[in-house]
Length: 274
Length: 109
Image 1 (cartoon, rainbow over the protein chains, first blue to last red):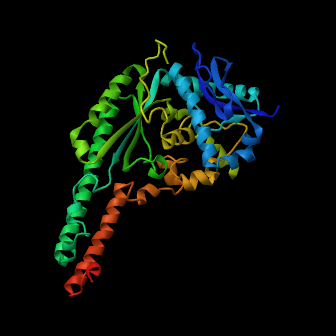
Image 2 (image 1 turned 30 degrees about the vertical axis):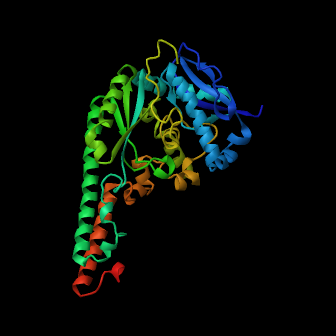
């Protein structure tokens, strides 16, 4: 057999069907591999893409990475609709089912602990963007393109420039205050939260500057309420007039909250590399 | 999705086609990290560490690795923004000195 086993997530036993026709990575349907009270969600992937050498090459290919990441996420999404999956990092691959079983067994206590803690929760992502200056304020009237501006004296030029700098500084300060207040409010309505690095707009394609990128852990049943809370800040006239935009994404699987597992990989690598 | 037991609200985001950055950020940097039989170190992946820099590293990890580009990038960090302001102010002071010596602003000359 030239297939490897790709693991998407580990869940507790669940009593529901996955979406019919669901396709995972490399176009293969996900299967459930139950072992000692845990369920690993797996599919077969070709060795020519997922063995060590080809995988390293494939990961350098943004199109392949995008397709793989979306397929991985679509399986996680389908699982999130019916249970609380513990999502594994992209491209967690084993030689065969016995490898997957051994892993489930070895880390069984960690999985069970995480599931106890996270069962019934989802993750919501909230980002705040600050639109570029000029899009929000009408400072174009004093643009240097107007013939009058060439007649500006140095002092007037400096005064204008200083005013513009100050406006910009004020906008940033305002954005920071807005983002930290929003974060405080949302944290009060969430069980847990994580702050992530701001996103690169080259990749996200979002306009404006990402000033807050946070994840909130919320029980499913409280999600509607959480959404309403975010929606209220979206329609906050003050935020809109200051060039601030709030964006909500989710429900995600509990990606940002699986602390039991975050360091093992890096540590192992460091040990091996020495 | 029609299951009555499913109390999850409809997805928020770009109509199901979530932002690639959101997905990559999660599937590559968050979630359960288990060493499988196939081992690749994401830090060795040039695309991830250089082109898409944000992905492999959460804030603390990134700092350890010396990746703190968003702090230097005025578009992403207010701290860097203040640094930029300081530079701008210095520039302006220089320019003011120039003007007071009787020189004309460069753009106007």
